[in-house]
Structures are given as C-alpha cells and as structure tokens.
Length: 299
Length: 299
Image 1 (cartoon, rainbow over the protein chains, first blue to last red):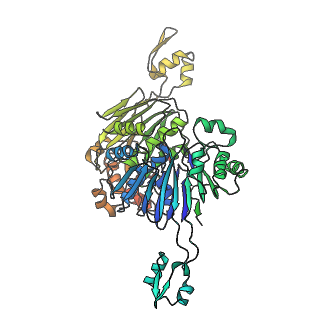
Image 2 (cartoon, each protein chain N blue to C red; image 1 turned 180 degrees about the vertical axis):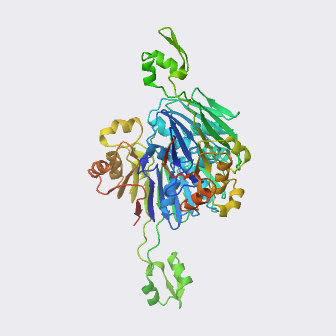
C-alpha cells in the first residue's frame, strides 16, 4: 500500500506543484482524495493506470480540489475505461458532475456513481472503511479517514507442515480464522498464525483549520496528511482563509498521537517547504513534506 | 504582436504537451483561443500576466478546449485581477461558466461578460475584428479569424521637419489621416506617411475536418493555425473523429493562399511531429509545428 502525492500546492499551481490530489493505492485499487485541475497529468506520470478499480473522495467544492475530475473522466473515456468509478463528496458534487457532463458532451465509456456525503461512515467492505469528519474551512468541507481492518497473523508454513496439514483449502480456512480437523485432530488458527496484524489508519485533512474534533478523528493514525498552507508568521492569514500553519498541523498530529505527519497544500508564496518542516519538527518528530509525485510506502 | 502556444495536444495531455490553448498578444491585450485543462499552468509559465486586457474565444465545448477557463478564473481572482474578462463561445458556454461559478464557490474579483456566438462578426474595435465560421467537427464548433485593420504608413519625421511642421498635435492629426495647415500651406497625410500597412490576418481552426468554406474564410491569412491531429496513415480515423491530417491542413492552407501554416492539436499517439511536418511540407512551403510555449512573432 502506498500514498502517491499528485498535487501539493494550495489554490494555484506553481512551476513544480500541481493542485490538490492524493492517491492511496492498495491491492490494485486507487483511492483518490481530491482532484484539482490537471490531476490527470500527474496521474499519467504516476503510472497508476486508467482502468483501475477507483474511488474519488472530494473534500470540498473549491475548484482547486475538484475541477480535475472533468479531465480525468474525459481521458479515462479516451483510454476506453470500462471499470465503474465512484465519486464521493459534499452536497453539490452531483450537480457539479452532472452539469459538466451535460454541457461538455462527454462520451463516458464507463458508469460513474456519485455519492453525496450524508453520514460519517461512507464506505465499508471486508478490507477497509472510509469515514468522514466535518473540517473547518470557508465552505462545507470534510476530512477523510481510511481505516484498514485488522489482518490475520502471518501464516506459518513450517508449522502447518509439521502439523501435517495438506496445502490448499485447509490452509485457507485457517488463514480466515476457522478451525479445521486433520486425522481427527482439531487445529485452531492461532496454532499456525502469528499475531493479528492491525490495519493501517491514514488521515487526509483537506483544507481546514485545526480542531479538537479532528484530533479525535485522527487518533493514532499511522499517517496523517494535513493542511500546511502557511508558516507561523502568516498565522493570521491562515485564520482568515480557514487553513492551517505547519505548526498547527504538527500540534494536531501530536495531540492525536499520530505516528507520521505529512505536510501538504503549501501556499504558492513559499519557494520551498524547508521552514514548514523546521516549524513542524519543533512539535512532532516524524514529519515529511509532500512533493508532487512523492510516493510513501505504508509499512 | 505574437502568437504564444500554451497547449498543443489533442484530447489528452502528454508529458510535454498541454491541452488546446493559443494566445495572441497584441499591444498589451491577450486574445486566448480555447483553454483546455491546465491552461493556467502554461499561462503562468508564459509570463503573459494575470491582469491584462483579455478575451477568451472558445471553439467548441469539449472539455479539452474549455475546462481550463475554470482554473484561470480562480487564479485570476487569487491574483486580484480587476480588469473585466470577455468570453465568447458556442451555445452552452454561458451554462458551462454559470453552473461552475455557482457550484464551485468562486469569489470572482472581476466582472466576466459571456457572449454566445450568433453572427459571423463577433467583435470589432478601431484596431481589429474577430470573425467566426462554422467548423466541421463532432459537435457545434467554430473557427476564428483575427483581422487587423490596415495601419497608416510610417510617419516620416525628416519630411515633417523639412515641411516645418512642429512636433505634437499636428503630427498626430497627419498620422490619423487628416490634412493640416501650416503657415497657410495645406499639408496632406500622404506627404509625410509611407504606404498604408495592411493589417495582419491570423486564422485559428479549432477542431475540424477540412472544408471549402474554411478555405474561403482563411483566404490569404498571414498565419493559419490548423487542426493537424493525424498523419495521412490515419486519414480514416481523422474522418471518424472529425479532425484533420497534416496533409489536409496543408491543402487548406495552399488553396487559401495562406502565407504561413502552423500545425497543432497533435494526437497523443505520436511521440513527435516530424512526420506531420514532412507530410505538410510536401504541399505547403512554409510550415511550423507548434510546441507548448512556442512564440511566433507576427511580422
């Protein structure tokens, strides 16, 4: 599983930063968080693939976080995508997509399913769930939490062979937590499985000011990607525009006992993010500053 | 006056080509023809400036020719543009802009005026006019013609001094084609002005198949920028998708007695445009293949 940063600039692109777009690739599926204008260009460069199983989660309806969906839809059609595409977002997301599909003569080659966020839990399958929490921005905005379900412990092949369990169906049953019987002997999963492996928790703040609710929402994330638009010197500007500073991002991460903090959504006024890193590291010891096309393996 | 190519790829961006966007900069005013997704990124790189007097002419409502308007509007607002912005385009252009402004919470810092193309002549002032002609594409599409008005001949300073004409107001009058009287002697403009300088004609085809009407429309252009999506080997594909080949573009240019042909809108299937140039040069002797950020001085 890896995080792939496709756009890390706030509001306007710069020479080397595109607009907000973060992908989480897991077992061949792509979960995209926001798609600012030109997301398709970074997506093409990332090599993630046009016909992957895919969901897009929009944090809020500012152009720099969702206009890129239009280009993605057109190019996916040009690439003859057949796989359906699910899009989640705040109220208005349906209107945005529908209005543009109508006017722009899209010839979509695949179905799209649009879900307006109503409840906290917006998606769940047997492997992970996605939850939302209200962010604190200038318009309705949501933060997202990806929560992987715990995985069974690693299968101990030697042990299984020692116990005389023939490879195949019986190994699967044990792997899925079921008892089996071999030569009239009951064998429990724990006899061949290691410790259950806790699922990973990854938070995506979107545009927001820091809030107590978000600290609770992102509790003990393995990775938290947080709005780091401004430095501390522009704290008032952050407040005025409903964004955060690097220091505020680090404070949220620390209070939430997050393992790794990734700073993103840098204002175009800054030439680099060296100061963001320095200010955040004063508070949290594991900080990464995102760059376009940065990939972080989730271990 | 110069042509600035900001996007030269057909339908999908490639690693080095953005989506359709061509600017004509003239005396501090920018005339933009189409604005595909990410036009603002090339526009930023071109240095043309966010607060210039500006008009955007959209050839047709396919996403790769107009979605970039949304990002331009947002970034121009971020850059505190105050100058108004005029947008021209086929029926539906108003709906496209209005729907997105409503849903995407734009805080526009300047007025925009949207004009749906109804007549052939869509703009005229004392310096130039813009005309349209129906193109032949898969949806309603227009080609554009920029026609500069003839300019008075160059002012001969020595001659004016010889004739004893004091610098200032009287020189202006002569420059603007009016007779004057100095020491009871009538002086005609032709006595101090060179030959009238014919205005430049620049054609922008947008997406189209070749047509006789377009050959007449682009008669004797100084520069013609024409759809060159395919090579001759893909002529059938060009027909099926209502585009042109490089050879067809050159044939239109030749029949229209165009001075310079610029090929653009290259399909992403081609790694470069060497063959487009070769095929077109078999027919027209002055051919340029556009690249992103190419600038052509109009002499």
